[in-house]
Image (tube, rainbow, N blue to C red; front, side):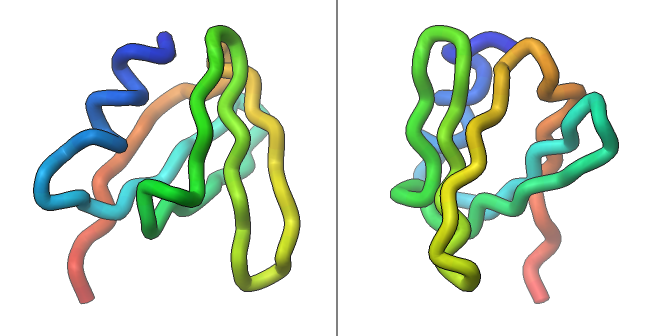
Length: 70
């Protein structure tokens, strides 16, 4: 995954929540565009429910999937 491809998901209008599927099997839900910061080689995901940050190497993001509205 490259930064520009990930930015495309964050910049969608209207914003659609999505999930990052990582190479180690983890997944991280992005429910608001302010909960992710994208750098050149990494993304920082904020998890508000747990008040923690997760650092994700872009090279380890396998897929990005739009979450279905519930």
